[in-house]
Image (cartoon, rainbow, N blue to C red; front, side, top):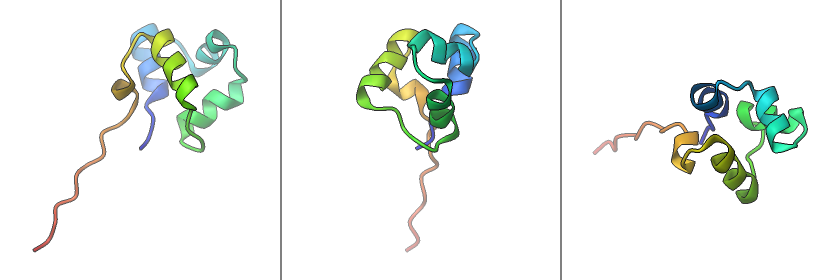
Length: 71
């Protein structure tokens, strides 16, 4: 699953990823890694993201298309 961190931060708070990293007191590289899909936030950091951005966990993830079964 891909995280929509950049879009959600911009939409809900008008923040850049840089600003989000500063608000979370995390290295900028960590937040950029999450946004690019190289790494995923821990459960603790996911909770912090939701608290800081005032959103639900589901708001941070892109829905992946459901593949149809071939019969």
